[in-house]
Image (cartoon, rainbow, N blue to C red; front, side, top):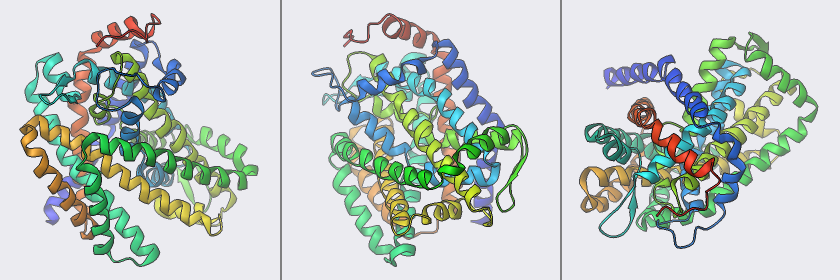
Length: 450
């Protein structure tokens, strides 16, 4: 087991090293330029996300699809992940994390467009799509589509299921002394009650849970920033300066200059918003929408909320807290987050714990749908029931198991998911440009293609 863990640890480090960062960020920038900066229409996408496309084809509303995608992406990466980036890469990592989100909007837009463009209607009338169908129908690369689905299932069982349930049970044990098997059983039961209703059940729960958990967490961030208001200006200056130059701060925490800040900031940003990973377009394909570009804009708002807003606020909370309390050594990302929120007496730890628990639970639901569609592509609808049973079992097992190896395995599968998806985005760029010019830049977003 030690040898296996060592292998996946090395593989994860290799896959999430500079080559992957350059590939992902390069795709973000390339698509931003080729699609004429779709980021300019992000507020139009926000407006569309709360509108109904009536009787358009699809299984859930555009907001339901967005909420499910956000449920899977807004998670511990937005909180602990940003803190880890700051502790390892210095405050400058916050800027690079934020920039990865700004440029990643274009990639999330492109993924959503292809998902709707190449989706199919199954025998029972439901919609299914995602990178596997873009690869099969758009590029005739079924073998690569199969690989994408295999990597998706493995990643989902790891980072999307067992790791999240483990986070919930561990937090409940540390905070309230709840036995691991009790929290595991309750979490598994709640997950089962949702996922056996399919995408409509998942979307309904996520539609209610995501706005609540995001508002609750952001409100806590705003309170801390208000408490640290006198340090906000200096924090912004420090973030920008240390993004490009070495900068020592706080109780010995030091940024390593441009390369270190870039690596940790971009890597954590990419890991948080999942732009380019290929997961979010799977649920985007289920949306009721008039044309592919409308849902693409709605999908793009996911990266905006996840990284440009939530991760940025987390970063500001952490850096202002470091400046306000310089006598504390912030070398541990998780500890850094706890210390920052502990400054809000009584309510701070509650906000953090509730935020992390709801984020983790919603991530389990979002990834359950991703894995289900990958399983359906590989084995058809007949295996979905057995997959759902497996998912619930893994939720419980993850709650009580030691998952040190699972993190590295899941990280590796996430990176391997991204490669086939990025291939489809780059090779189908001409389709993306054509569709974008047809609907977005010709002001025909209300045109009905389906």
